[in-house]
Length: 253
Image 1 (cartoon, rainbow, N blue to C red):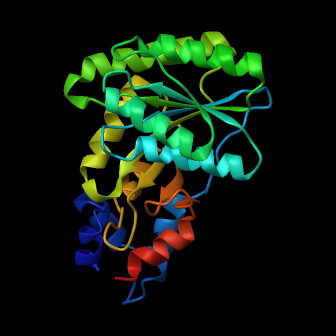
Image 2 (image 1 turned 90 degrees about the vertical axis):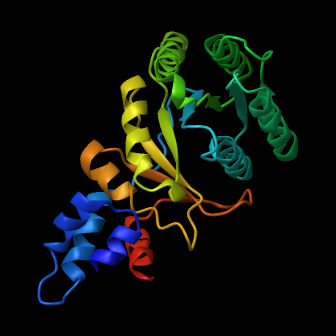
């Protein structure tokens, strides 16, 4: 059981604590404890006063842009329109990738030139969304951790702009984590918590090989709820997080 938990990226300290819940070879209390840590399951908040704004955070390569596309696709299927915002102006490819997704799904993307002020892009997008009555605005952001100070300042500025425009913080600040990076995910979560109130986690690249156990110490130590799982490459491959189903899958190795 210790090997299973460590292989699943639960981490040494959390694994040691969890093992204390095994009584006489009965793993049910251990499972119940993991479910308790990961609960309650929380859906995405939707503002009573539109537009609802979701800010997506995370280092490059975690699956941020794809997650935004999947959520926009889900909303479209529910008959809800959205605006996608290319707030990662540091990488030209990021805006182009978002535009390509926008074309495929049939939703508009707000972008400016490479190197533009991300907060200005977000300002324009929220103004456009409010003017047109678009119910959801999904904002992509840069994720270059090697310039941590710049990243944190940039995210704080974006948050100030959103708060000024809406009269409230973003409805969700979702940290997108890659299930394959293991314990690095915890450090990433700590860095982004310095920059803004992370309200939820999206665990991407979660499939048969990546167990994603790092979300257990993240939830336990940092208190951030897990909201969504990205389970594949297709637009449909985004599901609401279920603590019981996740825990059961953890033990099916």
